[in-house]
Amino acid sequence: MLAQITYFCANILINYSMATKTAFIRTTKTDKSKSANVRFRLRDGRTFQLNHKSDISVLPERWDGKKQKIKERVVIDDHERKRFNDSVNDRKKLIEDIYLMHGKGSVDTLYTGNKPFARYKVPSEKYGTPFYLTMAERNDLYNFDLSTRPALERQRDIFIFQCVIGCRVGDLYKMTKSSVIDGAIEYIAEKTKGKEPRTIRVPLNSIATEIVSKYTGLDGDRLLPLITEQKYNEAIKEVFAVAGITRSVTVRNKLTGTEEARPLNEVASSHLARRTFCGNLYKKVRDPNLVVALSGHADESKAFARYRYIDEEMKTELVKMLE
Image (cartoon, rainbow, N blue to C red; front, side, top):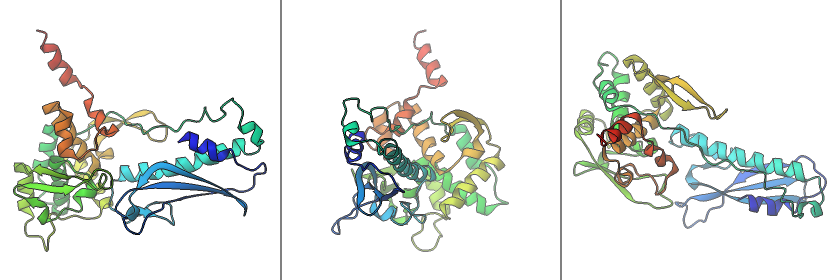
């Protein structure tokens, strides 16, 4: 990627005015279901422009060409949305920084053997150690009496359902009664749809079956009483606070890159349900292939690799093997 930026920056003009940066995608009319790479264009004046095709990809239906980010109306996990939008903005900033720093020099300067762009590093996606609910916490949350707050109870049920099937929130919002086939939920993960589309089938355990049965009376083909994703995430935080699940967890501050302690109810979101599914399942089977088959993670997923972290309980079990 840096080699591509270096190549097109080697053609910059000596004089610098007010350069503008634009992110956009190109799609074919025949197939808009495949992910498209985000492209970048830097313009300086009327006659000068630079183009860069990045490795950042997005489904065309999600791309807001005017705002150059994920469409606001698209149902997608907040963490995933922020990660993508930040990646686009960071790439714009990197291109501008390189242009400003080396654009005022001559083209002989840019072709020296000193490799002036070698010092520029695009940081890879960093993931902290995943925190998730224990089985006991999940069960306490599910059994907590919210009969006096039925609206909150419904969102609690949806969160628990997500905890036991492990899907992304975007896939959850696309599920209907028709998605339940022979005692299992079936769906195609939207995130990998344009790459390696495959049907994910997750058998419904007793908790999931109980929740589905509880809402069979919904109108039409609705599987669950869903509300907007933003309000769903707000409800999750409130449920945790009301149920007293407020233990401290270590999270990575995305602005500073440092780790900090936060109450679980303040950082809980729909994605915590997916981590709860993956984390507890991995601790049970210790086989990533089995978990991935149910979670829908892409092969060699960096996000999933975090679950290989060996916690204190697993360490204790290993040491006991030596007794």
